[in-house]
Structure formats: structure tokens, C-alpha cells
Image (cartoon, rainbow, N blue to C red; front, side, top):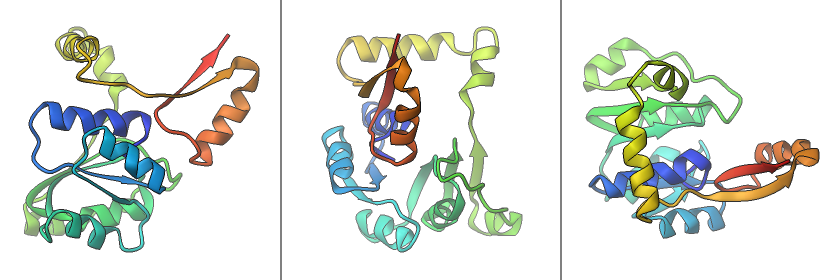
Length: 179
């Protein structure tokens, strides 16, 4: 979601680093409005049914070059269908609770497509891999060009409620648990 903790940062970083048209997906009109406020050029409903059509229409009826997917499941398959030739898709989560379906290598070859996975933890574990990138993120945040969203604060005693709100898609940004 372009209004989630990682997606909201991805929207902003795409614009900071000069991406062309940035299209965010989100489940509600309020979340889509937030994604637009953060710099997305368009924001569409992120549900699987009709996903590809909405994204391609939001891109001037052209397939897209890059997709970041944190949802998995049927949305992964729909998002893969939005890629232009030589397009790239990065999957970095499965918030739907469903794994991404298997991908046919022939489909990737025929479209000159690339699908890769990303998980931050191994990057942080590699000595020196995170330093320059993290320094740049902190610089962008300090300058105000990157605005991390704290979507809600919960007392630690209400951690279960925070998780329920997150699972119920009632939050935006990152949630903060207070001691």
C-alpha cells in the first residue's frame, strides 16, 4: 500500500530519486489520498480484481516499468501482468497472508521481465552494506524530503489491539508501541 509503513516511504523515495510516474495502490479512498499527498502521481484501489486494468489506465494506458509488491497472493499475479517489456518487479512481503504463486520462467523470458525478492535483514547483517544507504535515508529525513509516517501510538499493554488494527488494515504508516 502506498499508505503503509514501507509503501509510503517508497512513494517518497521514488519521487526524490527521479522516478517517472509513480502509481500507488491502497485499499481506501483516505489511504489513496494520503499516497497522493506524499507525492504519488496517481493512486488506485489495490484489490486484485481489476488491478492490472486500474494500474495500466493510471499510467496513460501503458504498462509500467517497475512494481513493488508487499501484498503477495492474487495481487502479485495481477501486478506481474502490469509490467512492460524489460519491466522489474520486487516482492518484499506478503501482507495478504498468501504466498505469491509460482512464476513461469517462460513468461519472464518472453517479456524480458525480472522478478526479485528483497528482505532488509540480510542487508543489515552484511558488514558495511547498509552504511551509505542508511546515511542517505537519515539525511533525507533530517532535511524534510522524506517523511516517515507514525500511523498510531499504542501502549505496550495494547500491543494485541495494534496488531489487530494492522491486520484489519485500519492503519497507515508505522505503528509505535510505547512502554
